[in-house]
Length: 309
Image (tube, rainbow, N blue to C red; front, side, top):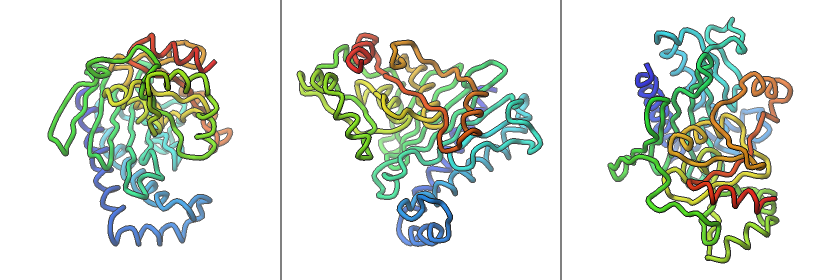
């Protein structure tokens, strides 16, 4: 069943990626502006992608609920997503009783999607009976790459532009020191940039070997480390919501990354779903969030944690 689940999750994400790309080009953007003009969303006036967010999310949820409950062992499930919150199948199901929970972020990196500069589509399926992620898929929408991992399989990627496939293992020569490292931070908003700029000890250590600050977000930060495109990923400020981080956390875990909390404790993809649901019910604008440091080599991850202190 594991392979069947993974195969179908990949199909769903690819379908959503195609839909997002088509809607963000040419005359389709005018239709999105119309949808935004009629929306009551408080961010709608400045964020064109809220319309495509909702469209892609509906597509993913409909696809999940039309197929997954017909699979043996997956007769009931809950879906937790950024835009629509918690949805269940059947509708009468109490989310706290769901044996399976899908986590969705249809467009992670919305401000980049609007300008056709980037963005990811994220999906992870959690098996509550086994207390584990069964499979996760992350699609790089405009670079047209698909990343995935399953409980019984490795972390892998396929690049549809270059027609290449590779396993994710952190790259051929993972760095063990902060000096000269390429580190992913979320620095899109001014407050986020100022938070990074304030971490002088870490930045000074990176500067010694002419290191680089990479702009990233959500699961993308971790997956790029797993693929060897960055040496480490750091989120110490606000933290990422579960639907943002879980696919990358699981894929990074399967790729053999060292992922720590800010106290230096190991983080895993095992999550406390009741507490995630409870936080969202208490205030949907303040979901449970996770802060982390991720790197291939433990020496680098622990050094970053120490420098953040």
